[in-house]
Length: 155
Length: 155
DNA sequence: TCAGGTTGGTGAAACTTATAACAATTGTTG
DNA sequence: CAACAATTGTTATAAGTTTCACCAACCTGA
Image (cartoon, rainbow over all chains, first blue to last red; front, side, top):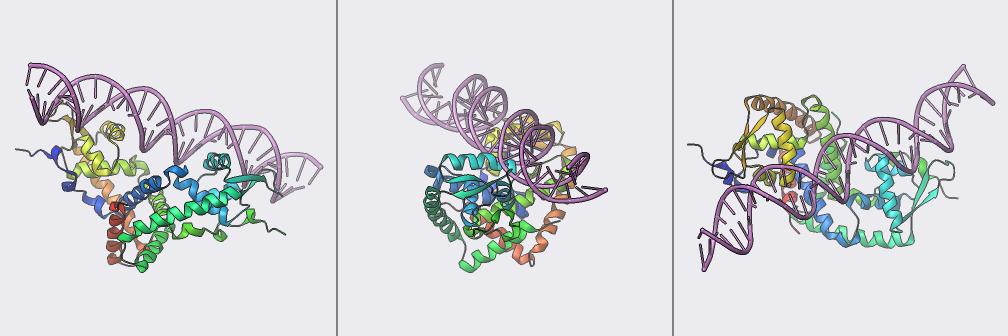
């Protein structure tokens, strides 16, 4: 007689090879981070992607859209909607590039600076909360380093 | 005189707080894994998501679609298209559940078993290749553990 | 049994993401 | 300078994901 697995609770499920795969574990961890980011920044109206754009422009004023896209590993077509949203929120602005009439240079507005500083406060707070499941700062540093290695590894 | 940042190469970009955020690093690492997965499994015609479904059904035959969705952290509506694809490829099949006429029980087909064994071979190979940027097996174990903790952390 | 609430699978709509093409501009090369 | 290739921002298109409501089936409690 075949037992009825359909009623099995989630705890008892055998994940098989998935449990040993870095790719799967990365995905699960990242899903959790995105979900928590959404909760924390719900009222701010920005996604992790928009936050990343602000972070880049904040530290590298005058970059073109494609430069930001390349920095973040996105396609430049994705940057159009992102910059549109941030411009509509008066957080950054497109200025015509001085030496290339095709491209725009991106700059934070005053409101953008305030907004971003506030957002960093929030995100840092929730990052620290999440990092509490790590033993100490050295483990976090090590993890950041390992993740960077994995992000840059080529086959 | 303001220097021209628009020509800055990607190497020189200042990532600011992003560099210290686990969420961002996780995203970058995962993006890389997904891209590499796509390269390795291009001819197999499956995504990481479909692979995960096969992995769960393989080890837990008879599960319902919803149970698989919960195990993977997806919405159950996403499972419809996924199972449709896998069924069209003759890799798994929906059988009517014995004690609940609403639900299906999912089982691998013979072809599915062969296909999945082959896929696991490939994915394991590429996982090991990616893991070469980790020092040794103990570092990988530790990383898997840290990722699981982050995936289950609640605020 | 029967009402009310819950759950499983599904489909439509909204949303995001990836790919391709396009016009305008710039760079390059003979 | 002229022809050709490459690049920028953009739009369109498609493909993939989430969100929501729906219906049928199940379950509970009077």
